[in-house]
Image (cartoon, rainbow, N blue to C red; front, side, top):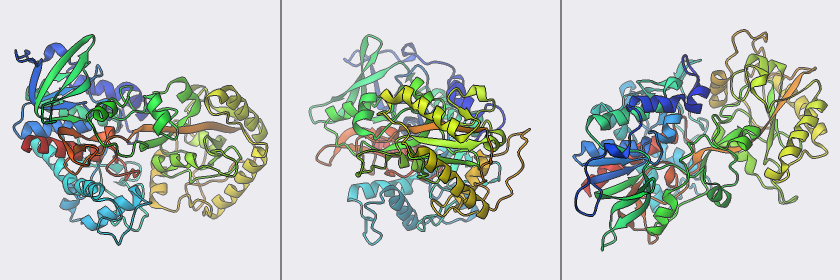
Length: 580
C-alpha cells in the first residue's frame, strides 16, 4: 500500500492502471503458443522448477531458481501477468535491509522476532519461551523471514532483476512508521519498508515490481504462459511432486518439473464459499478476480496440512460499492479527515479511526454474547463539511459528491441518520439484517459531543487516536489538505482530531469488512516446503505468498507487510528447489 503521487493516482492504479503497466512492461499478453515445443515423453512441457502464479512470490522464486542454474517455467491462469502484486503499491517490508546497513542502523534478530510474534501471535506470545510461545515449526518460519528477507532483496538487486529504495512518506519526507511502531518489542519502528526504485510510488508501484521480474525472466528466455490454470499435482511412486496438470481452455496439458513446483497463486477472497466457511466476513476485496483459492483443494488432495485458514489482510470497504462489485477498486485504507468518527449500530465509537487498515477492520468482528450479535458488523463513518471539503479525493471522500453514490448527506444529524437506516433497509437481506438501534441517534450525538471535547484537548482517552507515530504521520499522508479548500489548517493540538461543526450539512458512509486478500492456507516450513498432515514436507512442493498460512500470523507489520514475506519465501523456495 502506498500513497498518491503525481501522474496516475492510487485509485486509477488500483482500478487497472497498475495492471496495464505490468502488461505493457512484459510486452503484452503471453499465450500458450509462446511455449517451447512439447517433448515426446508424455509431458507437454518440461522444466526443473515450475512457478505457478506471476506475482511477487512466484516471480521471486522464478528469478532465484533461474539464477541458480535451473530451467524455469511460469504459468498464470489470468490473461495478464502480475496478480494482485501488480495492483498493489509494490512496497516490500523487510528486516535489516541494505539501506539500514548503509546507514549503520542495527535491526537485531532477537528484537525483530519478538516484535513479529508479539504482533502476529498475541495469544501465544511468551517472551520467556525459546520459541516465544510458538510451536517449533512456526517459530522457524518466522525466523526464516528475518534470516532470508534482506538476502532475497540483495539477490534481486545484484541480479539486476529488481531495484529497490527506501519507501518514504512524501508529505513529511520520512521513512514510514511500522503499523505497530508503539509496541515495546519494536526497536526499529520506522524505515523497514522498501519500494521499487523504478516506477516507484503509485504511478506503477506493484506493476513495476512484477514487471521488472517478468522482464528479467523474458530476457533470459523463460517460457511464461497465461490462461493456464493448474488443477492437479502429479507425483511419482515415492510420493514426490514431479509436475502438474493444467487447463488451457478445454485442453488439459501436463508439465514436468523435475526439481519442484512453487505455488504463488494468491488467496481466496473471490471464492465466496471458502470465505463463508473460513472468514468472519468479506464483503469486497482489492485482490484480482483470480484470487479464488485454487491451491487449497490442490494441496488438500496432495495430503497437505492446513495452517490457519481464517487469516486475511483486511481493509474496510464502502458497503454499497462492495455489494455492487465484490472486486473493489480501492479499500478504505487510512481514513481521511479530522472531524470524522466511526460508530457502530448503537451509535458508539468502537475503534481508533486512525489505526492501520488491517488492525482497524478487525474491530468489526467483536461478538456480544449478551445479545448474540456482532454489534460492529457494519460501521458508520460520520463527518462534516470541513472534512469532505478539506480532504476530498482522499478515499472514501469524493472530490465531487456526485462521484460517490453511496454518500449520505443531510442538513441535520437526524436527517443523516434516517438516510443511513434507509440504506440499511435496502441491503438488509445481504447484511444479516443490520439496522440502526433505537438508541443510535442519541448515542451518536453523544459520541460527537465527547469527541469534540477530546479534539479541543488533543487527547482521546477512549482509543488513543493520534497518540502514536503511525496515527500522526500516516494521517498527514492521507489527509493532506485539498488544493482549493476553504477550510483552515487544524489549529488543535492533535492534528488527527478537529471538533465537528455545530451546523450541517453532515455526511456519512457505511463501511464493512473486506480484504486486500486472504492469507490462509497450507502450512509451510522454514524452507517454504508445504507440509503433509504428518508434519513432514511433501517432496517437490513449495509455496509462498497469500496462498499459504501467513508466516507472520495476523500481523501486518508495516507498509509492504504482505509482499515482504512473499518475496522472502519465494526466494527460499527457489533456492531450496534447486539444491534439494
